[in-house]
Image 1 (cartoon, rainbow, N blue to C red):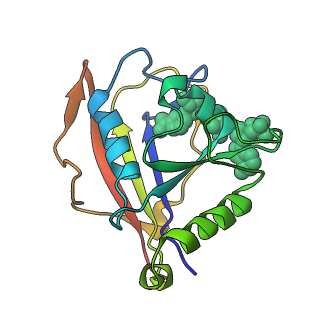
Image 2: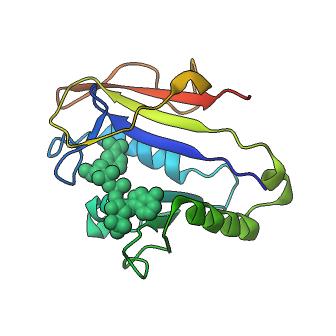
Length: 178
Ligand SMILES: NC(=O)c1ccc[n+]([C@@H]2O[C@H](COP(=O)([O-])OP(=O)(O)OC[C@H]3O[C@@H](n4cnc5c(N)ncnc54)[C@H](OP(=O)(O)O)[C@@H]3O)[C@@H](O)[C@H]2O)c1
């Protein structure tokens, strides 16, 4: 069985993604960036089905309580320490492989055979924030050799975005078949 495994992140020029448990640009709000995150994660490719979102414990608790779990998505929290899913989360996984096994179980319940047997393309939805903010959490170096930047992607604006004085650009990368 294969699954489509996508990543999504908004990243500062120095690859910073977080600061003091929050987004680096906090308290500046990038509402359209947030809507992009919601659209890309909550829109399932199969009608009446839900995507799964996998996130670390700190990311889970960085989401305001009233917004947890992320709605219309099955929320899996990664933690080696927690013994039970935090309140509101659908599943807890002690490592990434276990999270993927949970995804497969969800898929087995949700998705038709044709989709399960389709080859999984990997996409990275990257928002390039063009302003540097203080960061204490960084993306690991991603080897983009195996990805290509798509010239366009349905529902993703190509033009430069600006909110509250912060410019950013949406990018979508797709894995190159080996
Ligand atoms: N810019 C963005 O797009 C974006 C997206 C998400 C988050 N953020 C920001 O990033 C920061 C949080 O990120 P972070 O990297 O510090 O923390 P994180 O990955 O959200 O959480 C770290 C914790 O998650 C658990 N964990 C992570 N990977 C695991 C794995 N493979 N297996 C088992 N457990 C795993 C561990 O929990 P235990 O200690 O309980 O074992 C670990 O201590 C916040 O500032 C947040 O706002 C930014």
